[in-house]
Image 1 (cartoon, rainbow, N blue to C red):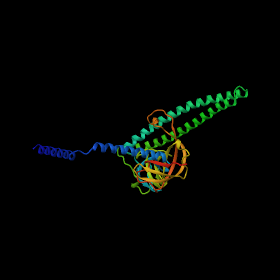
Image 2: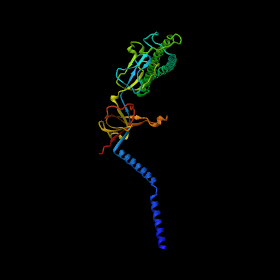
Image 3: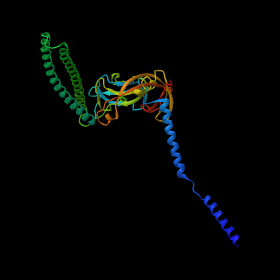
Image 4: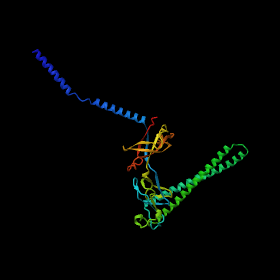
Length: 351
C-alpha cells in the first residue's frame, strides 16, 4: 500500500510538472528587448558604415528660373496660370489693362478702386520719405565736399597723408552714389504715382455711379500684344507673385517659371569635406520621398549658409559650406517635387 501511494504521488508530480511546462507563457518581454537591441545595433552599424565610407550632404532639387516681367504699367485683369502648372514658351500668362483702351473700354470694380487709392497713398508717402532722405543726403554731400577741399589744402601742405585724403575722398564718392540711388528711386516712385493717378481717374470716371463692369480679354476680338505677358521659357510655374486687380510697374516680376529640363540638385557639405570630391565624381542621391538615383557633380564652390540662430531672430555668424551642384541620372523630377529635400552620399577616397 505504501509503495502504491508513493507511485501515485510521483505520477501526480510528473503530471503537474508537464502541465506547468505546457502552460508557461511566451517571453514576449525578452523578444521585444532583443528586437530593440538588434535594431539599435543595426542603426549604429549603418551610421558607422555611412560615415566611414561616405561623406553625407543635405540639399534640395533646384532649377534655372526665369521671371515674367512687365514692360508697361497696368492693372492685371486675367491670370492664365497657377503654381505647378506646366507652360510652353510663348503661352499667354498675364493680361494687363488700364492703358491703351480708353475710359470707355475698361472699367474697375469698387474693390479695385479702393485698392488703387490705397496704393496711390502708399506711393505718395514713400515719395515724401525719399525726398526727405534726399534732402538730408544732399546736405551731407555738401559737407563732405567742403571737408575734401580742406583735406586737399592740408595734403598740399603735407599736414596729412595721401591715405587720409583718399579716405575722405572715398566718403564723398560713397555719399554721391547713395544720392544717385535715392534720386533714381524717387523718379520710379513718381512714375508709379502718375500711373496710379491715371488708373484712379479712369476708375472713378468710367462707371457712372455704381454700375461697374470689367472688360476681359475673352470679350474682345484682339487684345493689344503689348498688354499680354507670355512665358519666356517652357517649364513649371513655381510662383505667381501678383493677383488680379493689382497694379504693376515696368520691370516688376509677376510669374516665376522653372526650366524642368535643366533641373539639378544643390547639396551642402561641411567645410571638412573640401578636396574630398571633384567635378565629375559620381554620387548617390536619396530623395525625401524614398526614391534613389545616381548623379554626377557638375560644379563645386564655397558659400555661406545661415545658422539656425538666425532663423530664431538671434545674431549668429553664417556657417561656411561646400556647395555641389549635381545632375541626377533621371531626366526630370516628378510633379510637385521641385525644392524637395535630398540626401547626397559621396564615396570617401580610400587612399
